[in-house]
Image 1 (cartoon, rainbow, N blue to C red):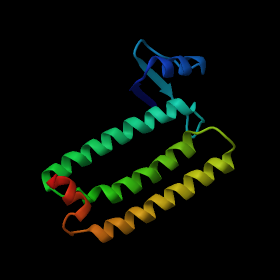
Image 2: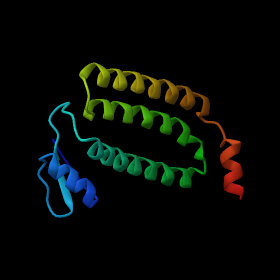
Image 3: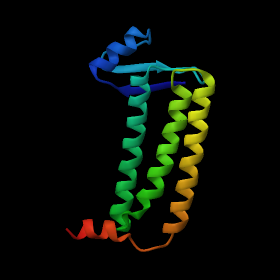
Image 4: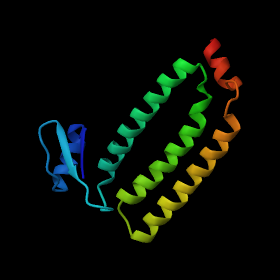
Length: 133
């Protein structure tokens, strides 16, 4: 599986030193299944995924005028990051597995709770106050 992403020169240098193939402004990371990756590369992948997700949610809340949907999405996204970093992270396998499972379960549980609580409810007063300012 290949992941293409723009990276700063520092991340490019780090990835080059880790013997990943790279081009001028685009680094191509070869990610074998469940293989550890340099933390900077994993952080860049996580940042890009979160930026796309939260950008899409922002567009949805502009249309629906209900910013309350960010709460369950935020918790599920943090759980997803725990799984992502557990899978791509460095360290011994039991620790990575513990981070991935506990973080993933926590994110899903909190996301489900907040999703059920906020489902078909008007916008939370915190977000309403921000919108009125």
